[in-house]
Length: 260
Image (tube, rainbow, N blue to C red; front, side):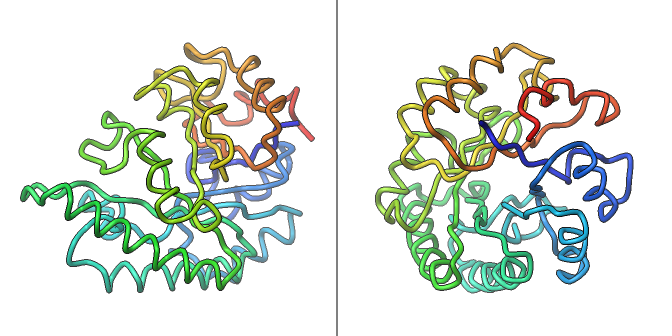
């Protein structure tokens, strides 16, 4: 049966962040993910996880200057030391939260017109270094193709691009974070793309399109998609990285057939 993790950056925003863990557990979730933990001491988050019987399954490495529009540093030349420091900081949180997956964001292509080959070489070198550090810590880094509508200029856009990068670094070292929302916008043909890349997929995420709201509010036949994912044997977590159309709990009807 598909295993769903509540994304606490987007869901249960009716409450302060640290109070969302209890709301997720009350709704039937056994695991959570979120974008970033760094505004809170790791010990405080660990306590909320333990008190509510939740597993932490994913969060993002520090992305650079988020307020200024940065969305990762892995492909950005000249930021290697900052990138390495960010990975090490993230791994401290992974250890404290027993989190097995770390999303390493590629970043937005610089406006200065850096050659694509330079970006690609930087990305590969940084990911290789991060993979070694993460491997020593028992964490698997994942990379995520993101559509150009949500993040214009993002370096990594398609599942085929991500697959090529993963094979270059080593599938045993880096996995794919397959976000069905981004894939639907950029590529479509969701089930066939899951089938194609399944051996590389370490984590999935879900939101409907258009609107990035909960499953059942848009164009995708989610019961069919989830049944096929289950039949294909995917046993990782599927993060619910969507913006509830209304109050979070009121929009969880889609989740009831899969509630563990």
